Length: 342
Image (cartoon, rainbow, N blue to C red):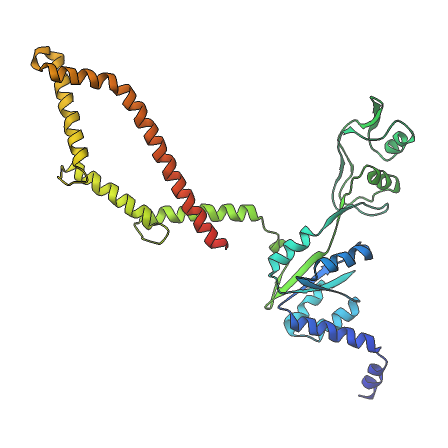
């Protein structure tokens, strides 16, 4: 007991206060994240801290103090100790994990690579002209492994080439030349390693979602659900108009086919009777022109000349009706998705 007391007396006050500050932040926010800050210049890190001030608190501290604060917190928080390594900071926010990940990814910016660093991705130099006039830079580019030549009074890159593969160490010459060509292979920013919310840990492989694909899946699922509910005649707020229109159309067809004398179908029935009568008259006239009177002959002639025009008009009407149905369905879909995504 005396040894523990003696040891604690030698812990600097500022370290105790730092640990307590971290513990207070842990209990004050519903979400705790562990981020990597390696390779970020101090000036840029300060700028990132300022840009996040309205949505999150970025806490930079020594790993030993971070671990001590986590170990002195709840059992769930202690699990975040596994992600504390190398250059680490903590981030606290009330945003959900997915929004935090997206926010941090958007805040990353291109950065030049330095000689001696290992490139995380292939570095590709594209073929094409440069802004450099002929001179010593041509030899420097060739020495760095960049296929350069002179064309039209300018230095050009003759072919697209991967000048460094992922995992390779970049030479000083290549790093300097990439910077002069304004090729920045690195992305500098807060690298989110893990987030804890309500005892659950989320890692980047879970948080990195394709929003466009998710949205497309929602659209497809909504369309399929709408079609299923209509075909199953399951009334909902979204499909009731379609169901009523479908029911009205089907009932009208039944009335027409059953020759039910109702005001809503009388015009159709009379038109149908007229058409059948004209067909009979046309067939009779084909066998014996004297079998029909002059008035009916005149009507048959007028009908024959008007048929192509009516057919074209019907096609236009049908196209407009189809377009209206598509617009109505798309409008319903958009409204449903708007309600879904807020």
